[in-house]
Length: 126
Figure (cartoon, helix red, strand yellow):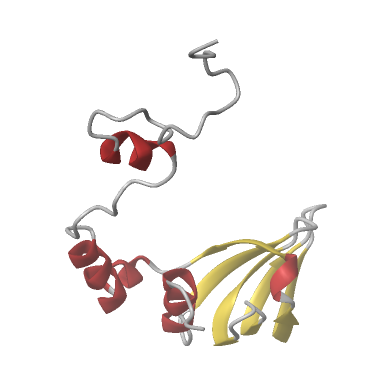
């Protein structure tokens, strides 16, 4: 299983200053030392702002990924190489239709449901 683009960008942010808000409203701003695939983050030389407004300076902190509400990453990551691959992929041929749309396209004069009958069909020949 490969990781998605958001996790790739998070890994690219390692070594840069980020801002992170947890699910309980605490805001951490510091240097991202390491980010794991489950979004666990290790920050160093950081400032914590608690919900009540108190500010605290810490050397290091480790935050569980499931407790992260959002991250603010540096703007320079907009130029990361993985975004160029997405733009190329946007020019692909669209996928063929599925479900009822496919049945309509394949029908070619036949009934939509292939003459098998379906709920709500008119009773013919009776």
